[in-house]
Image (cartoon, rainbow, N blue to C red; front, side, top):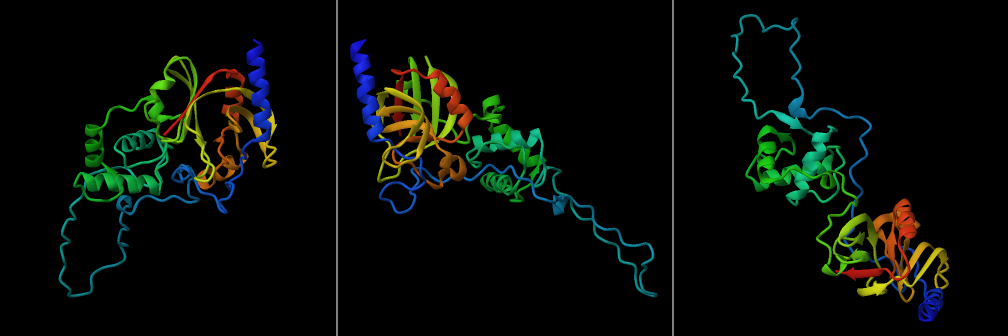
Length: 293
């Protein structure tokens, strides 16, 4: 017991002296250098005005008052071949669009969480899938495209339709599957809170820049500080859970505002305050932290 108290006291002193910043600019970097590719916001904003795709519009009918000039031969219009029925296109919003996005993500052509809104990013993903399958690249989901996609993908799970993070999570590191673990993946920019292999919560995270990298390895939470402020950078680090020197998992208002356009000074930044508040209440001093890439 005395050893644990001494360890916590030593850890607190070390964390207070070397707290990392939640700032967008990493120390010595001059400008932010993200540790992971920038991620664009999910395509959730609907345009002010939506219109049907041109291929779905009904051609304007010729006014009955117009007639062919006198003496002119009456031309018979050739029928225009119709393509496959279009099921979904830009401007559509439905649960079927959500399923489409989840299946496109499984095919590796859609790189964000399903939003149920068919915007330009979804159209580009459909076009990429059509190119791969030798179909006309319309960007619209017609019957043929949909049937090909159904044949190549499994029915999406609820987590695939409503993912807990904006990133695609890989299988957790084997070191995360036993006990109480903060499982932090640089590969997918995610943190999973796990107990005996079960994922109880997941959230997006970002890391330090190349100048102040987040350390990798197996650690333990040695100090929790709900209202921590970095003494090095004079920046708030709410819900800080220190695991290696001055490096901690904590909420970052900068990450919430600017996303992956910035980086920390080595800490693991979380941008969902509600999620990390719940996590902070559940995590105990002594719980394992695994950081891997």
